Length: 538
Image 1 (cartoon, rainbow, N blue to C red):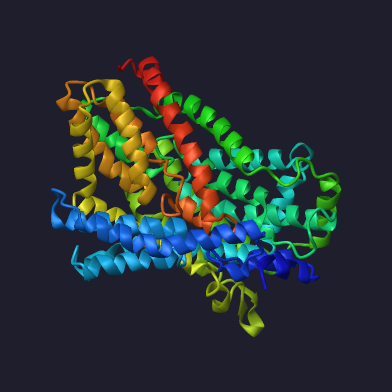
Image 2: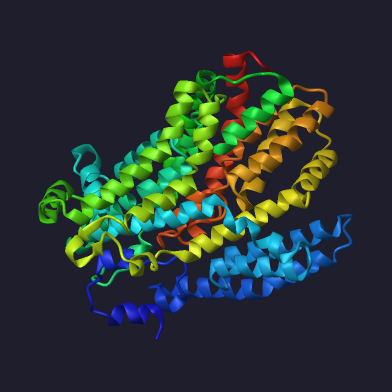
């Protein structure tokens, strides 16, 4: 029986809430409802990948390249893993694990060194955030937040305005809270909004009774707006994302030029504003919502809010845990604004209130705050936590491993220096273009933090060797390091929204590469002009 026949043969009404609670990053073809054309494409894509991945790895490993053995084998394995991630012949988390196993078996690094980065605090951020999100979905807190946003008349009637408004909220928050924390914080609300839209489409019979709410185009647009909007907003301030601080520190060390908080914002705001416009256009054009305007949404939301009833003890407990977590995530940013990022207080607070540690401590409160003390019942049970998407956690963990190895083996530096020599870069514009492209390419397969830490130190000596001021290309690389929108492993926020099960890898790649191109153009064209206007550095 084909997917289409299964869909036509089933008269059951989809339980939208259950679909979102039980979503998974990877679903086999039998678990999806696909048209015949989609099913043929998916089968072909996965079959090609099953054979192409090992062929690419073996062929590249046998090429007579003038590279150290560890760099050569790492590049071969990474290329094969990227093929597995894009074509999905196996679940995406398993593709990463296969690559990690191959690295150890081939002796690129010892096994203990290979799996060491899995202990990164970013992994714990995922675990804590997913547990908090599970509580918000289980007890209806996310639904209340979603109703509050949708109840605004100017927002709720238009699917495009819902996506744009949610993106603006994300951008503003991520300017002062880490991108990962922002997305983790807002993910349950995004799912709540999508579930409301899905139910409304269902009640108005605009979709089949047994439709798949995880395959709505508006869902792709909303989730990618959450992930990409956080990356855009993170560029607005120096503390918005770790690459900003890394790049700013390296630039100051190399050039003696200090970028103040206000100066940074004056340079970043025009670029970020245009980036957001480009982002909204890309997402809404490539993932056109099923319906432009949903009539009656305000009345529907008002009815649903009334149906929710008073806030329960479980909801109150969830809000307490969530509120404490968010407050601790924001606190280092408040210290940065008042005492400065160079202060000992900011360094101490930032180190001790690491977002991963805060996330797991906040999640732990859910198992300590009781809903019925007499029966020893608490806000969450372990069975609830066991249902979070551990696949996404494994996926990003393997991405961190490859990012670390790119730096540790020197492969990233080899690629950067080799490309610069090959291209014969001799002027500011050419080196800036190269810096942006290299940062985006590196960030596609590793975290944006690792990309900044690897690329900026490459670009500065390349610029110095060419006899030009490294300020512009180095800052351009810093901005571009926050890009990399094509794969779930590119940034933590990509991985988090991929974990919702709403965004197919093919849709992420298509939307991501379009935004990569537009963002790169904006950085290359506007950043040098703004640097000259604000700082007088050319």
